Structure formats: C-alpha cells, structure tokens
Amino acid sequence: MTFDQNANDDVADFLLEHEERITEDWLRVGFFAQHGSQDVEQARADCRAVLAAIADAARSGRAHDPAAPGFLQVRALLGDLVAMRTRHGESPSQTALELSRLKQPVLDLWTRHRGNEANHVAHTVLLSTALDTLRLAVVETALSAGADIIAYQQQQLMELSTPVIKLWDNVLAVPLIGTLDSARSQVAMESLLQAIVDHQAAVAILDITGVPTIDTMVAQHLLKTAMAARLMGAECVISGIRPQIAQTMVQLGIELGEVNTRGTLADALAYALRRIGLSVNRAETA
Image 1 (spheres, rainbow, N blue to C red):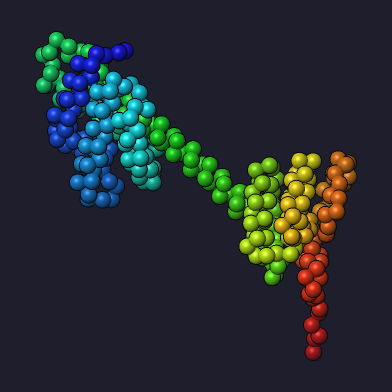
Image 2 (image 1 turned 180 degrees about the vertical axis):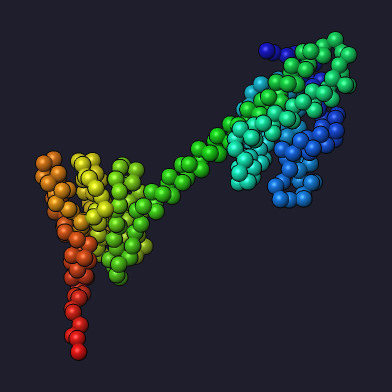
C-alpha cells in the first residue's frame, strides 16, 4: 500500500512531536530495559533513536522497507539489544513478543490525538506498517547476527581441530583428528604454512592417526600441503597411516610420490630430529 507525502509527513511529525510520551510508554513495556542495569537514561536514549528511525522511514515513504536508511541507522543498536536479551536466556520468539508490545501504545496515542481526522484510518495503517517494519528489522538483525556467530564458531572449531604444535626447535606437527573435508584441509594448510614461517621450521609432520578414512580428495590436499611446505623450505612428513587407510589408498591408486611417510608420530619425530642433526639415545640406568 502506498501513501502520499502528506500522510508520510503527518505520521513522522506525530512521532517526533510525542517523542517524550512514547518514550515513557516504551520504557514501561520493557524491551529497552538493560538487564541488571539501572541506566534508565541509556534506555531512554535508545527509545528516542529508534523512534527517530521510524519517523525517518515514514517521511521517506519507505515505512514498509526494513532496508530504509532510517532503520539501517539503528541496526547496530537493535543488534546490541537483541544480543543482550539472548545472553540472558531470551528466545527469538520472546524478543518478537516484546517488540509487538511497542505498537499498541503508539496507536492508542494516535487515536486519542488524531482519531477524529478524516484520514485517520489511512494514517493508522501507515503508522502500523512502520512499527511492523521495525519488528521485521529486528528479526532480520537477529538472524544475521546468529548466522555470523555460527560461521565464527565453525571457523573457531576448525582452527581448534587443526592445531599446529611445536615438537622441537625447527620441528612442527599438525595432529589431524576426525573426518577431513576441503574446509578443514585448507585451514590445516594455512595454519601449517604460517607456523613454518613463524618458527623457521625445517620439518613439518602431518599426523593422520586420528583420521578414520581417506579418499582421493583428502590425499590431494595432503600432497598439496606437503608441496607448499617444501616451497617454504620445510620437509613435510605424513605419519599415522594405518593398515586400513594404506589398503584404501592402494585400491584408489593414490600415490604420495616423494612425500616421506612414517607409521607412527614417534617414528616421524625421530626422523625429523635426525634431519636437523639430533638423535635420541636411551639413558644408561644405574
């Protein structure tokens, strides 16, 4: 539904004219309340900012559009409010319910002050649309924030599941555990190459003892990692190839080429120490 500019201006002017009254009504609703905080002035400032955003969207003729400049200006504020309520255990449906309670006080105020005007119904629809769009903007903000958090957590999990460990001076190891996919393999490669630069490593061990299965794609990623490490001046050793994985690799025709392999991480470490001119000897017992 479209509205003429006079209607847009009338609704925007009404919201700004009654800013104080609407703010007080909204504070009683509780959406802007700071959990565990007595900062009423901050909550009042948040109310005014959101109210100004609704008025701006209405005046611009985009009361129906959550991407209107007015709503975009308070996206960060709305995101903070949603995040605060989420941290205190509030579900998205509860947040949406709290938001819906902001609408009625404004409509009641409009009816008391403008209910006898000829265009009352049309203006009421415009005002209701703007308030509904605020709710939609908050929901979109919450969904976007949730998606960002999930993506960040996935990235953190991948990094945690592919740690680079310094076993000795100039010797690094990446113990891989669980199923490998392209994303994890890429994270492992990037982490290892950066660690080679940081520690000036001469030998890097990729230990796949904890990898249950291996296929052509995973093998290619391992080979690419070994080749990239060689270009960085380090030799890459793959350890922990169990009998089942060895059989699978033979059946798939996977060849590791010139990449050194060792049966266990201990064997790989012993080899790495020899490569840097060290040896491990059993101490004599008394």
